[in-house]
Each structure stands twice: as structure tokens, then as C-alpha cells.
Image (tube, rainbow, N blue to C red):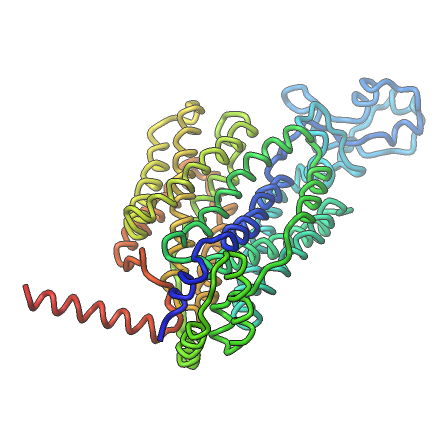
Length: 515
């Protein structure tokens, strides 16, 4: 009787097939950060005034200066009001000049924007200013709610319908609704489309990582998670360059959608999942196909042994899974504040992306050298403390503050990569996707709270930093309770994991007696 790990070693635990599927499933993560562009690269308070072209019907030859002097009230500092205008009247131009206009009202026919950093943003296209100035944060929350919904929907779906379908469907949805976002005629359609894009991304990310991980052997298992994070980091750099070059959010959105069409949709099913579902013949065909791609030969008796072993385990009771661990609160509190650290938003976004690349490369090395547990504890404690250190400097020290928050985000990303590997190794195949789904829900709840958490800065600028940094440090302390999973085969059933724990406990007890 053998386990699935042995068959992987026989057909190649990181051969050509594993390399292709890992790269293919990781590539879409390169596109995902660009979906933040429409509500990240905006001017929340652009220079503007109310559109007062109504007066041109009375005097079409007015100069711009005359039009503004006649139709806009001035603020205390002498500048024209950004949110108010004189109420339109049905008078001729001579009467308007003689008597003047006194009654003010809100902007009735939109705004005129000028001195813009961008050609077009959702703020200017949907007029998210004045009494709608908080709608950008609402857009962020709606998108992050979509990520949460994707975790709810596509996590359990992968247990029932398979890893393959639960990975392919989100890619198709992301393509369709990325186009819909760019074509949105109003803010309501934009938010619905962004919600569905978020749901697709949330479902794809967790399912693709699990699918790749279940095909990789012990020695390279961390690559699936870390490489997907690596592509996401590269995507952040590309997103900064994309918006810097284009400056029009709709055009950028169409480019994102175009990139989705190149996603490779031929994805094989997880043989681990097929065997736990009793679909042995289908699993055998895929295993033989993988062996052929890796130029390996599979002894027939090995397949029979693995099938018998897994069939005896598939009837084990499924356990309820609860995962209470998250880094995303700190990550998104920093990521969604990219324009508020005193330096160029393009530079900070690029730094956020480029520094994540070594984080995930170091993660691959650290996971194998020092293990999962110590990697997680060290990154959490260090990341939380670095962010708390920003409180020692005034907000005028933009370079120092940016350097510290970039370091903190670097460590949060490192910890996030460890988490994605850790969760998969802690739970058996029969409930692994459910566990990933619950973990992803915890991540998404934190990301959903992050825009509102950042709004606490209205009371004091340090409040969000103190809050999320303290929670990260507390999580680092709680991580001491987790077991080490490095260099261990993925468990196939709940019974197998429980047996491992009992065996580990017996060995520890025997060792204490011998001592």
C-alpha cells in the first residue's frame, strides 16, 4: 500500500508537466493587480468648477473668465467654489450683469475639470466629488466584497465540482466583466461589474494555487503559492507603468481584459481530488498522461496500490475547518493608501510591487531552510514592528515613512506566501479546498474592512497604523501554537492527519519517558 506522494515521485514530482501547470496557473495573477487601477489611481479632489454653460444660451460669446465671474460664487480665499453655483435664471445677459445672481445651489449639470494628472478617472467620469467624494472608498469596498464572495462561492465548489472547473470559470467571468467595467455608463454598473470581477479573482487565486500544489511533490511544494505571489508583485509594477503611460482608466481596463484572453484554459483536474471522489479510472488516465509528459513510466501495480489505499480513505468523515488567521488587514491598509505617503503615487506603487519580488523569492528559500512555522512568526513580528516604527517620525518625513511602509508590506507579503503554503499542508485533501476557502474568507473580510479602517485616520493619522500593526504582532505570537509541516506529504484524509498527530504525540511521550 502506497500514498499519492510515492506515485508523484514515480511520475516526476516536479517535471515538465508541473513546471508548465505552475507557470500557466500563476500568469493570471500578473493581471490581477491592474484591476485596482480604476479606483487606486484617482485624484480624490481634482481642480474643478460647476458646469455653467446654461448662461451661454443668453450670451454665447462670453469669455470663460466672464462666464465664471457671472455664474460662480467665490470662497473665502477668493477662488471660485468647487461645489456650488448660482442658480440658473431665465434672464437676458444685460439683466444678469445689472442685477447679478445671488441664489446658490449645488452643481446641476456636472463639473468642468482642469489641471488633471490623468486624462480620465472614475472620479471625473462619474463625478465622484463634493457630496459623493467618499464613493471611491465605496468602490474599493465593493471590489473587496467581491473577493469575499468569490471565496464563499468558489471555495466549497471546488470540493464538489472539482479543482479544474472551479479554476476555469473565474477566468471566464473575469474576462467578461473586465470589459463590462470599462464600458460602464454609470457608477452603479461600474460597481456591479467590479464586484463580479472581484468574485472571479477571489475564486481563481485560491483554487489555482491548490490545484498546482496537489500536483507538486514535497521538495518544491512551496513554489505554487510563492510563484503566484511573484507574478502578482510583477503585476503591481506593470500596473503603475500602465496607468503612467495611458492615464485613461477605460483604456487601461480594455488592456487588462485583452490580457485575460491569453490565459491558458486547458487545465487538468487534480488526481488527488479524483481519487478521493472515487473516480479512479479518470485519475489513472491523467496520471499516465502526466508521466508521459515527464517522460516517466508508471508500473501498473503502483496505480492499483494507490487506488486501493485512497478508496479505503475516501469514506472518512469530513471535519469542520476553522481558520482564524489573516495578514490582509495590514496589507490592504497600506496598499489602498498608496497615494498618501508624500511621494509620487506611481513611484510608491512601483516600489510596493518591486520589493515584493525578493519577498517571494526569499520565501521559497526560507520555507525549506527554516521551515513554515519560524518563517511565519518572524515575518509577522518584524512586519508589525516596522509599521509601528513609522509612528516615531512626523508625516513630513515622506522618504522615511515610504521606506518603512514598503518594508512592512514586503514582510506582510512574505508572511502571506507562507500562509498559503501552510494552510494547504495543515489540512487533508478531503477538506483542503474548504480550509483554503475559509482562510480566504478571513483574508477577504480583513481586506473589506481595510478602507473603513483607514477612515479612522480622521480621528488621528496614526490610528489605522496602531490598529493593524498590533493585530499583526498578536497573530505572530499566536503562530507559536501551530505545528511544523515542512517536508511532510500532503495528508489525503482527516483520519490520516489525526493518525499523524497521535503518532507524533506518542513519540513525544515515549521520548520523555526515555529521558
